Amino acid sequence: MSLEGGAALKEGPGADVAQAPVRRVLDTNIVLDLWVFDEPKAEALRASVESGSTQWLATAAMREELARVLAYPQIVKRLTHRELPASVVLGHFDRWAQLQTDAPKAPYACKDADDQKFIDLAVHHTAALHSKDAQVLCMKKRLERCGVALNPVTTIPA
Image (tube, rainbow, N blue to C red):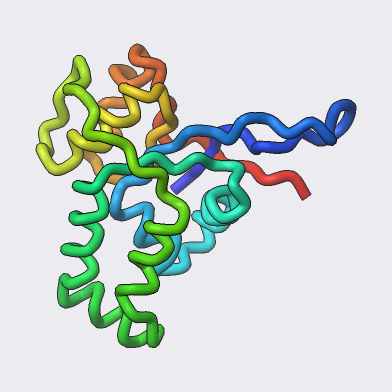
């Protein structure tokens, strides 16, 4: 999975001037990659979230979905193996996600109704959307028409 976007800090001339954080919506599988599976390809995105370079937009329904998924047997097995309580993952959500009200319906509908809330929020806030879901990935061109970058690469300056 490639992740992109912009970093909150520039290198070179004007490097001391901080830019506004990049607004991003992270679907549940991406959140699992960040804090349950410790996915190496998600390292830059995790650093961006934790450093404040990313403004992670989410809703209460997204938190509820994460809590539900953390109770799935295959996820519980992984959490147990890592000696990681689900409450720690939810704590990351609570610490870094900036809760928004549910967004109005986007002009395009996803075939997977569970993913629509992520699309709606990203479109409403013109935020980058990070997802690995095939039903979302096939919407890339439609999302671009709404100003939403799908899985932009995240780079964090050294």
